[in-house]
Image: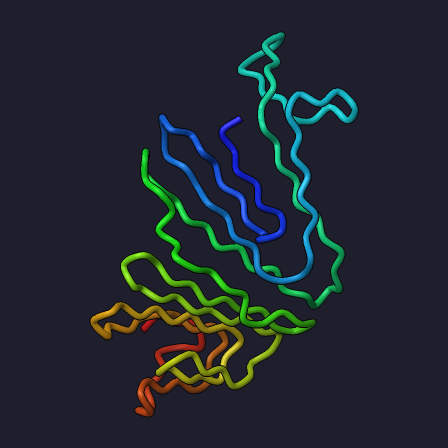
Length: 171
């Protein structure tokens, strides 16, 4: 069915050898994955190009029990036809009632870190520190640093304070 589902790792991936694919990583509360393919009770896992043209198709449902304030992060990783996933490792760094975070390294050495909180708090991700609701920091092996901040009132890179254009910005 051209689909890889890894519930223990909170990961799923399309596996079409003839087209582009996408890998999906989840970070946060415990999840329940259900895969449907041509099911009749319930009627799930079907595709139709028109009336009378029902064909079985993969349909993935992801469910979780959560408080209103919980965070679920989703990392989407598209790949071109025939390419393997560029993700070397993806780790959940925070998962509690008010925060969620991830730390991902790609095959080329690029590192992507992200933290999301219910309210602005101090966040430190490698050389970047901020008082923010969310902070994403990307670093390449050559020390290039870029990212984005949401609900941010202070930001410093390698200890140097930066002037903020607004509370939500890229750097």
